[in-house]
Image (cartoon, rainbow, N blue to C red):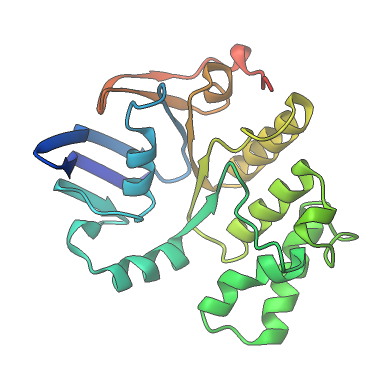
Length: 236
């Protein structure tokens, strides 16, 4: 395996008045191609900031971040946006679906930004929705879908560009335990098919679906350990 993402001594500092808040303090993390890694920690530990770094949503105050060998720390926002669109698929806790668009239209949206023609966009989105078990819900809007169905639409949207990395931010946070378990099983299937998955979570049992867990506290990775699959259990 080769590294797909590397964080090297990454700091993120925010200035609030006369105070400086260090959200990340010298974080180093290597994620190999095809790995399933959980970034775990309590509220305020720096998980969201780490997610923003890994997902090319922000750049560090200092340090280096490599995505497929390219240092993204110095790139412009437009260059970061292009990399995000090609290489990273995002799954959010709150789904982030556009309420006025159908499931089909929500899934097609990332392909629109890539300039793909409409017939190919519709074909790719249809395939992803059918793979997610939503072939009969493609024309439904988000408010006509259950929470689990909305999350599956969000996963289909994340996958439609065939990204190298799937970044999941508390992917079961708004779901009941049964539906959450189904979503986690789906992520495991994607991992088994070769996708690199990075999941941000506060939930100890959820983290053990991964291969490896990096524990964050006060902006520092305090330890990294192999996951214990016997502890996997989604709790609502």
